[in-house]
Image (cartoon, rainbow, N blue to C red; front, side):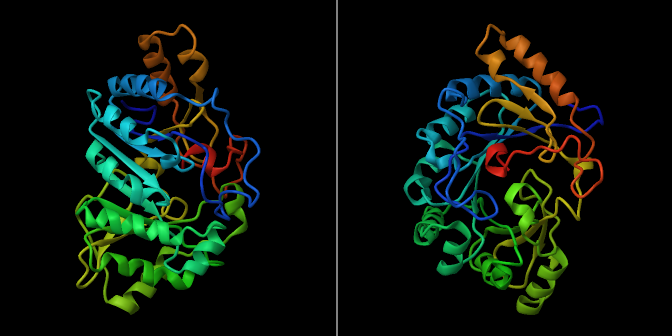
Length: 326
């Protein structure tokens, strides 16, 4: 369907949990979170499937499962299989921190997952532990290797470049795409919650580093996903390098996505709090037709753009990234 600005909205990011087995410095406090969504307030898989069936009627055909960390929720692979079976759903992908990926990669692939994105900000154990406050580096790397061993092709590594942590690691991270046909993507740090204390590394600076290390970067004209990433090829690389710049390469005019939080809030923009709470409706007496119409009206109101670093901050969402699914 189209929103009020004529953008075709066909992609929903669904957070299936706000819980996580890491404590990344730019996402969660070290001691963890006191106000996790309770099990009674979180959407059940049956409720997620019902909402997706309604969204599919509105033309939403692409799904990204997120968290928190989605793989900590039991039955994730079965959810993928059931989502894939819904009429109108063209694609189901997942973003994970990789800690449980070695164990679950086979199940995800068997269930028909269309893409696996692994969040990884460093290839050095010490820096990994500094960023995540957990010693799971070997588990994450084993998960990535397991995906490769299964010859799965639609693998992406997502890195958030942060001047205080991993600036010197970015060349090593990019090198992972040299010998395997995957994408390594550098995602601009967004000033949400705890991330406001850190400094982003610009696309231009990263490109200079990669060009010096590997040679000239050539824009890639093909399509490697549903989002706004700009991809490049490098000499002798089997994979590609991507950049997502939500702040300095603002792509709101082409934004095609909405978000569904783990407690049932249909969120229209990562920066803003506009949207609607679906939990009372889905647990009340609302019919599928009523749910569909409510979501149609909410999606139509998607705002024109985010307001990061702008004076108008009245609609800014105060929730942390783990609460909204990224």
